[in-house]
Length: 84
Image (tube, rainbow, N blue to C red; front, side, top):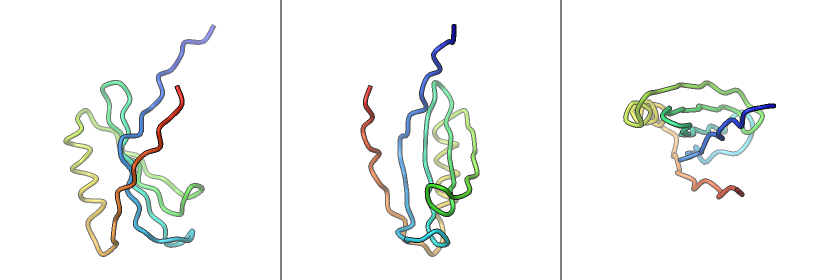
């Protein structure tokens, strides 16, 4: 018998507004129980990701602010509601 693993919840998503595998960048904020996760993705859905894990949302948001700093025009996207 398998224990049910809680699903990670996507809280926020930012996109740099650029299309194409070479230009697109995404940053995600997710939570799972009492842990916070930041994903920095380059190249769209099939691109390469770097993950960061934190104890508090404040620590995660500090990393997000640093990742969004620069010349790109970042847009916050609303996560899609999930069935459940």
